Image (cartoon, rainbow, N blue to C red; front, side):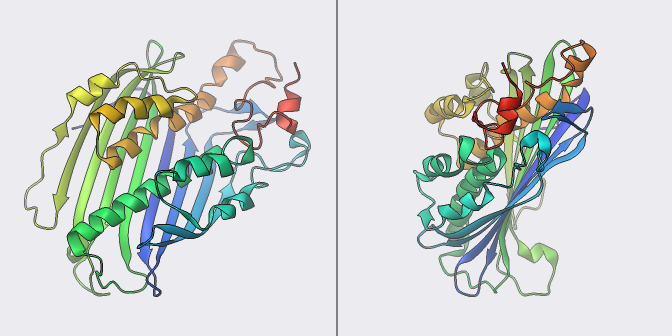
Length: 335
């Protein structure tokens, strides 16, 4: 599936999850999310945000692979949308970051996402850290399932040896006639136990790829057309494997809304199709990326002569700590 996309580049979101063997039998898990705005400036929160890196946020966790227990977890936020300033009342996106640590000792099971929402969702935390934490949970479960199927429970890896790496890149483009294009590419790199020094390809256990092209009607934020395909290769593959399209699933997702609360509708539509977890993870990244594109389109408001303060531009009420209803940014919106 070749991705031939045209349009004006708006935004790129990159997420990654890595698993590493520890010397105590547990796993170090590292996650990151990076948002790169590619054009314009945004008047928000009493200041002007330029293009460039908008969010750089990370998670570090320790997981017991036998029980799927999250032993420890902590967040870092090198780059945030709002630093402390008079306009924010001295508040910053980093203020609630310690809350992430309260998730320690929970299990990566069917109730994990609900516990995430209760602990760090909405006005209690950061929507980007929440998205990354959800991806971390599902990725760890999937990676361990595949690793055990290929290498068994005791693979005999060295301390510090990498087990798995997932990368999801979503690029957004503004097209003609009120249409945005979202292009997602996901790669799951499964690694085989290997000595510290040796041929690089001896480390390859498998590589799974997913590609998604979604055309989105704007401003209704609904999917008007969708293409998706997958392919898999392993260490024995000698020729480039073919892509496998899924037109039935693509048709099922036509008209999918990508606005607030869209994840529940996406999961409802996927439930009947039962796609394997990596494809579900890739599709769940479309809506959060679309939200980031809205800021890149803010120059239209300025050009249209909107109120110069544009105090109302920003997140939905209670969508995160900075945009909670009783916070400084929400109060700045006034009536």
